[in-house]
Image (tube, rainbow, N blue to C red; front, side, top):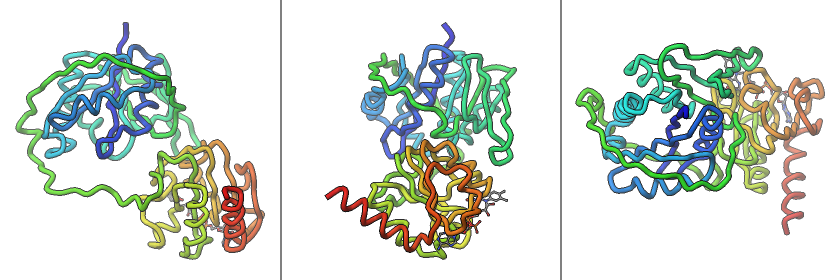
Length: 317
Ligand SMILES: Cc1cc2nc3c(=O)[nH]c(=O)nc-3n(C[C@H](O)[C@H](O)[C@H](O)COP(=O)(O)OP(=O)(O)OC[C@H]3O[C@@H](n4cnc5c(N)ncnc54)[C@H](O)[C@@H]3O)c2cc1C
């Protein structure tokens, strides 16, 4: 049977939502094997968290080099796994880390690569949205194992329970892969709100906030939502770049996306247009974002959001 590897995605030892999304796409191609690269002694715990989705098997490799040498060590081991298992494809999360790993693995294993796919079909055809989402491209790797990075939140994850078989392997990590050492790192500040790409609800603010995100944050907190921002807001220094939604920011696909004071430029839409429901608050009834809104309020966000926040809180109590 055709086999497809996925690189299980962990942040701070926690399996992220993208792992199940990758497994869902991989299951269309063949039997799904998740690769878990864990610190020494933690492989079993990491593997045990892969208890959802279409994963048939887990390959665990333990090494402290993954934390010490980062991308170099991860790419080195993945290249060796591909050489050993010869899968039809390997799917990797399309964030900065995943794309750099994928690029290195493609060079080391002389295989073709496609990045930023939003879908992958059973015949390994990858779909990409380019030029800010205005053009759809279908492509296939025509040499070696198909190395495909998949954008988070593009595929609806199959979350059925799974109890995959676990295989532990060990590989020598080359000296070349250890040439860069991570001297320190700290996890991103979460501030108690959910991670942007994982949240079920995202409330975003744009230039219309005029730099005051208090009303956006209060509404987000009333809903237990993550806070996003347009590039106009992040470029102005009003909100951290790590919260930017769009073509050059993060892709989100929550159940509910609330855009406050955002005009709806194509580059912003590219990062949120697959949200299940879109609510818009904008004082300009001609703002293009209303074209993709399921529900729109024409009004000043500083008047609308506090009332909406009060309403949500009243419903909850
Ligand atoms: C290569 C490239 C990549 C880009 N990548 C991204 C990206 O990843 N993400 C992104 O967001 N942008 C990106 N952009 C920028 C994008 O083109 C827009 O400039 C940006 O999205 C505009 O942000 P905005 O909607 O907040 O601001 P504006 O376009 O200025 O819109 C502000 C909106 O707020 C409304 N408003 C004003 N005051 C109020 C109020 N009090 N109450 C309610 N509404 C109000 C206005 O009516 C207006 O519609 C990119 C651009 C380029 C060229």
